[in-house]
Amino acid sequence: MKKLFTLIIMLFTLACSDIDSSKASLPPIQSNPNGDSELALLMREMFNDGMRMKKQIEKGDELEVLARFNKIHTAQATEPDKAASKKYKLYADAYLNMLEQLRASPKGATETLFQGLVESCMNCHRAFCPGPIVRIKKLYLKDN
Ligand code: HEC
View 1: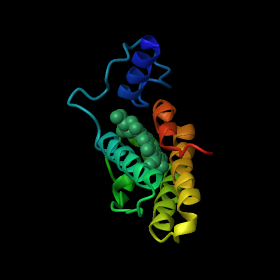
View 2: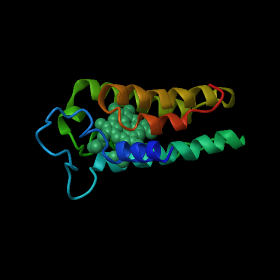
View 3: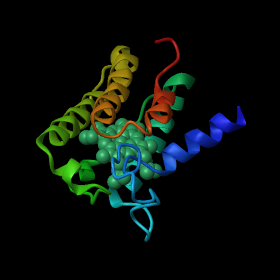
View 4: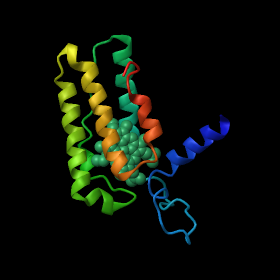
């Protein structure tokens, strides 16, 4: 169990850059020695904000969608090529669109839209960055 936990932490820390790297001859140490990319930091904020919203929903409080995260399009990524691709932009727009739908959500639709928001994180991550998926799954509301 502890091993698994360590592995998850490792995957999380390495973000995507080292996981699907095929450069086996180079030691897969952090590609960014000065710390984490702007995008990685933004993603952590998105995750934390997702957790905050999940808790509000679970408690039955009124959901507050506070942040906008439009910087997902411009933040410097560890692997800039990925974030410059057309596919990345489509996934990013899908995510931003879900966030706006959630913001405008009538009460009865909040849970469904929130699950859709998490799904929009998952879609991009399945395509570009599988490392944090284990962590992102924790955002799903339980009964789905
Ligand atoms: C459009 C694609 C895309 C969407 C949508 C997306 N991500 Fe990411 N995510 C990435 C990429 C690319 C990285 C790697 C960032 C880097 O290393 O520069 C990343 C990294 C992460 C990380 C690891 C950050 C770290 O500490 O290194 C987490 C956690 C994460 N995303 C969570 C989320 C959550 C939660 C959502 C939805 C609310 C989400 N992501 C939506 C592409 C996406």
